Amino acid sequence: MGWEERLEKEQDSDVKTVAIQVSPGRQSFTQNLATAVLAVSTSFAAKFRILQITIHSTVAITETVTVTFNSLIGDAYDTIIAKLGFGGTQDMVLIAGDNMAKVFGDEGDEIDIACTNGGGVGVLSGEIMVQLLE
Image (cartoon, rainbow, N blue to C red; front, side, top):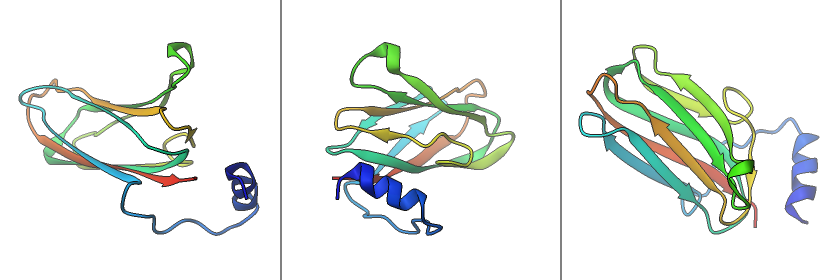
């Protein structure tokens, strides 16, 4: 069954994914906002579906996070799939289909995550979790 068929089957189902393979469908990142903005780019060695991104800050911040689908076929196809502010909190969870667009990528497509550092404080730690489709 190809990934398109699996997608159609999943769309017809009320079942939600509650667990995914830890590796290689999960990648982590860390950035000290006192020294630089967060600018992370990641790709996966297979077709993928983004599930969620979690970000934790060591202190409450008001910075803005932007998540971009960076297409392998060119800049004209890059798309912002989420842009949210921390709003004075320490944790952010971006979930595909909720507060982030559902995205399917091919091998070589990237997910870019950026966070401002206007306040100049806090260390961010996060994870990008995807479901590998092939």
